[in-house]
Length: 476
Image 1 (cartoon, rainbow, N blue to C red):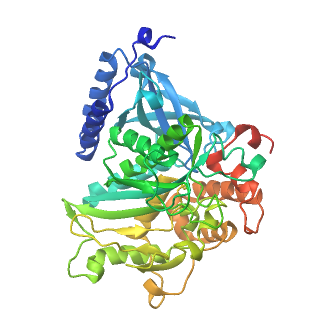
Image 2 (image 1 turned 120 degrees about the vertical axis):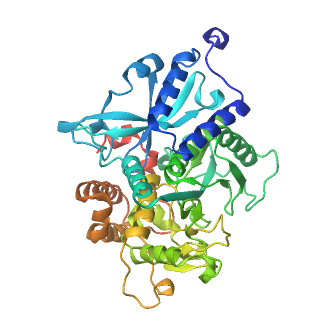
Image 3 (image 1 turned 45 degrees about the horizontal axis):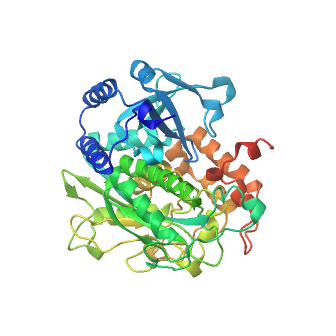
């Protein structure tokens, strides 16, 4: 159909950036929900060129789901959007399948039409249980409620920024076809900071960075990473829920841009043995009344006692939460000490093998960096586990805790056992959701070879939660 006849919304990138930055500012300033909702509904009713609203939510493992609602329908029925939860992995059983989607009107985005299609806007949804309460397996809703409760009770604002690495491989659906090909093909072999302006990796990074920019990410820097065909595109700090949403958008953007180029953007933590894997270094801090509570110019490494206590709790529960930060069979290939792997349960300002690093900072940027996070983990679960552990966890009775010789598990079976056996993970997730998550991870592990070996095996890609293939899963 002729796009001119359709007359659907298609805005320049510069205009998209202005709209999304304004929405981000409203979110940051905590403009009341009623005010934002009326503003967005009025926009949708008045903008005739919008045809549909894409609502995004994530399952328990962190896989992003999207569904389009006709705009006219949504503006009339936004408070009664039902869906079948039994079809979502980790959600309800078939006998109790009805769930609702609420709309988080603060998390509203204008999307570029060349990437997402014309006439569409996007918004994140909140999963609501049959009784009207937030659904316990919707980690986004759990994280949102936790962050809001801390702001109301203590005035804390949880801040985060993520450094998300990935690979660009030749060919579309390279992950889904891995069990047929047994390999991934690089598009670039230049390495760290090196690619020519016109090569495929640079074109991909440039295109992805432009989409991020227009979505209000507030980019900082982008570059090829250490491994061949590896990339990283950095953007600025945000409140914890916005930061987690941006992780989901980042991976969605990368995959869509790569697909349009005839390539695959992969966030497997270690798709190729023998080169550096991909991480999602998670930088966090807490502020109150505009003051960074992690900063202390007189403190050890110039961070506060409050920040060091936060670190100590994370180190104490490092093995307990490892499965939440490294949620796939493949993730444990990355925890290899020969490739800057953060597999040591200690804290350091310089040692990149440490689970927690203390970067150089100032009053504005002072933070801690949790390095042992894989890019295929559920970002909402990661943020919840890091912040709640850092604030509410216990401290182990271990001498020299911050430099003790302790290591994260090198396989998913040990990580599952640690997760199941820890009382702390029950406090984090609740017994029911904890059991569901552990069972999903166990099923994935049991379909793969127990010993990792020295080459990536087809089942760890084929049955990976982000390489979900409905046809293949239905064979089991």
